[in-house]
Length: 487
Image (cartoon, rainbow, N blue to C red; front, side):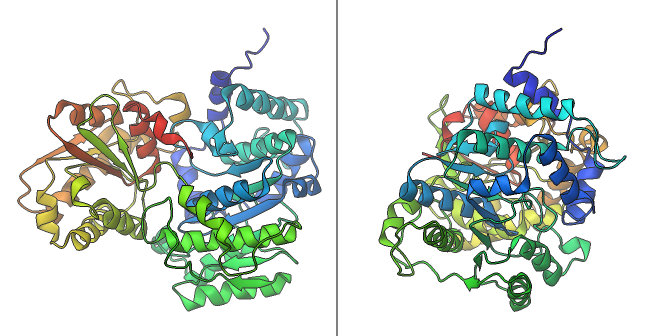
C-alpha cells in the first residue's frame, strides 16, 4: 500500500524517533556529550540524504548558542536580517509551542503543513533508500532533534534561502547543528549554571562546550559574561581555532525592543553584533557605528511567541494570558519581574509545571521573589493575590492524549502516573506561601488547567510558566494560535 505523504503521517513517523525520558535526561546531564559518535553520525546522515558538508555553507549561517537567551537572540537576529537583506531568511529554533513546523521558518512564517510533509518525506525516503549506517549501534533513522535538523537543512537548501539563523539545541561542540563547516558569524549568549549546576559542571566546562561552535576565520561573538572565567574560556576557544573574538557593546538606552524584560537588552545587543558582522561579511553596506540606526525598527518589531507575551482569550475577554516558557532560576526571575511590572495585568492565577527532577521550591521561589520585588511587596503578600494555583502535567487533553505535535516520550511515565512532580510543586507552594487562602489544584492535563480558568468569573490574569511545552499546550487548548505569529 502506498504511503500517505501527509502532515499527520509525517508527525507520526517523526514521533517514532523521540528518545525516552531516561535517554533525554542522560543527554541533558552530559551537556550533549553523551554520544561520542554524534557529529560523525550526523555527517553520515547528511551524506545519506544527498549532501556534503560544504553544501551547508550555501545557507549563510548565523550560528547561536548559550545557556540563556539564545532563542530570543535568534529572533532578534532574524528580524534584523529580514529587514536588511530582503529575499528569504531561514530560522531554525527549538522547541516548538503548538506545531513542530514552527521550528523551521522562512521570513518568520512556519513551513506550511504541505511543505513540511513534502520535505520530511524526501528526507525520510532517502534514509530508507540507503539504510547502511555508520556503526552497528547507529539507528537507521536519527533521533528526533537530529532528524528535524536534517529536515531544516534540506528545506532551506531546497527553498534557496539567502541567510539562515541557526539555534543550537543542546551545548555546542556536540550539537547536531554544529556540522556547518563555515558559518558567516557565530555568537554565544549568556552562560549560566541553571541547567547543569546539579551535575557538577563548572562554568569553564560549559563555556568550552558552547565555544565549540567557533570556527577558523569566522567572527566569534559573545555578550559580556557575568563570570570572568566563562568569558576567558570563550576567548581561548576562539584563539585556539583562529576566530576573531569580539565582546558586543550594550544597546543605547533609547532603543526600544519588541520583547519585554530587561534581560532582552543583552540578547538584542548580541543580535546587533551578529547582524552587523553578517552584513559586512556578505558584502552588504552597514552603518559602522556600534548601533546602526536601520536596526531600530526591526528590534522594536521583533516577536517571539511564548516568551513574556500577553494574549487575550478569544472565548472570554475577561481573561488575559501571561505566557512565558521560563524554566530556569534566572529566566523565572525575569518572568517575575515582567509579570508584576504593571498593576493592570498582575497575575491572579498561576498554571505551572517543570521538568521532572528539577528543584520545585527553588524555581517557584525565584518566580515569587522576583515578582515581589517588582511589585514592592513580600512573597507572602504576593502569593495571597492568587485565587487559583494550578500544577498540571504537559499532557494536552483530559483524556490523557497529546496533540500529535506535542507528543512527549521524554515524560517519565511513573512520574506522570503519580503526578509526582505536580505534588512536589504543590508542597513547595504551601511551604513558600504559608496560610495560602486560595485554591491549589493538582491536575493531570493542560486541558484540566485551562478548564479551571474558564470556570472562574470576573477579570483575571493567568500566568503560565515553568515550561515551553506547557505554554504551547495552553496556547493549543485555549485557542491562542494567533499568538504564535512573529509579526
